View: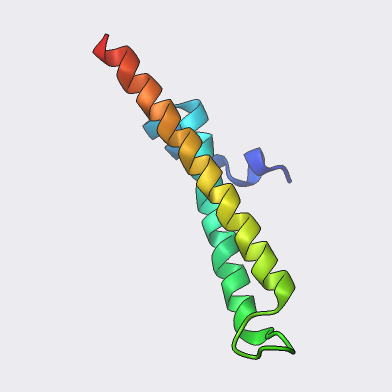
Length: 90
């Protein structure tokens, strides 16, 4: 099943609230947040053999990549909002 089929209800709701592009980005942020939570839960059980207080290196790298992706999407959403606000004020 494609993302558009599986996430149809969320996409419809967020696209209605924010418009098509920002709505899809908002759903993407939600999915990334869910993935970060799942990876964090997994990291509780998978510890680094070198440092048991830290999650395994692959868990750390996945978490970092997801966090960076989320940050980039948030910056795009903010830029779209600023662009929309600038157009509406003119």
